[in-house]
View 1 (tube, rainbow, N blue to C red):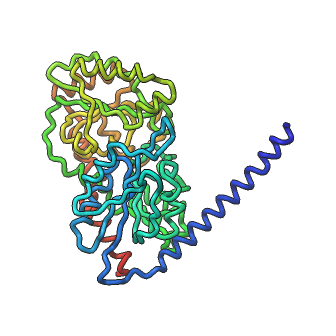
View 2 (cartoon, helix red, strand yellow):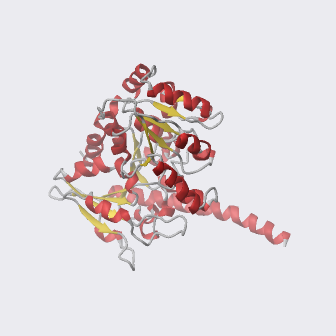
View 3 (cartoon, rainbow, N blue to C red):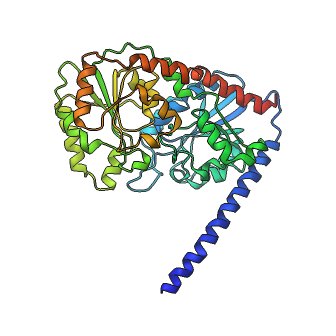
Length: 415
């Protein structure tokens, strides 16, 4: 038996290595073939598909889609996929995402990825470019994963989140190897992936660009006055420190019982938080119902907005674990109380490191309590620091959406 297990190990690693080589070679072959396909039909509109599954992530792509809907050179489609149920491990039942994305269509078109019986054959729609919401194929049916679609279209990606640590899991190789265009969140993200895929990038069959991040563009345009009265808490979905960690268990009782007086608290849990906590037995359904009931009794609202960008307009101060919502909210020029994991400052990525000097750091409840009371009193000494960081590091994002459309047109027409 021991010999058999050792033999399995010996066979497993060479097989995994050979499989990796196969999929790398396969991806490069299709990327190169897609580049050779001539699309130069001046009367033809550029057909673009957007795989959509989570309303909460749509704000990263929505401005690009909307701009395409208003541009006669583009013909955009939404490919609506059922939300992935991580508790029951299934993706074959539509929920609220269906009506949400149908309403987002504007004058564009939509396609249902699942008809109740079968998944669509996406190849027959002949898309020139194909955008994904997330770089994780395991949330999708086989017919829509990147290893499938790379065979017949140019895959594009706008990050659904920004990396807060150096060794991020937001650039999974298995997905990124299939990308034709990666419209990255900043120069650091572009440089990292251009280095990883340097051979393909030199051949111009992959491009990772820093032309601006659309959600940063939207956040920079927020002009609401900060009244220091509405606080937003955004607890994370997992206690895994590699993915950012969470302080939900540590702070939910204190924040629930806090005397907010003339201020108010809104809670926006990560969309996967309750299910993940239940799945990992940190909470059960009865406990979740009890917490929600307590919040209701104390007039603490659970945010219902699909887009967090809408919530930002209603918020004065944000309280957050390490999360990609921090850089986004930072660009509204309003204050943030950051709740880090132990000694995580040395692990921070370049983007997140650039904004840390403008954050109020709360390592425990005593410090969090202090910053809440200070900001509620309209004392905000880091306001000047935030404005300086934004002007020095983020102002180029103002033209992100336009730059992405120009890049696609240039590639399509070969100008």
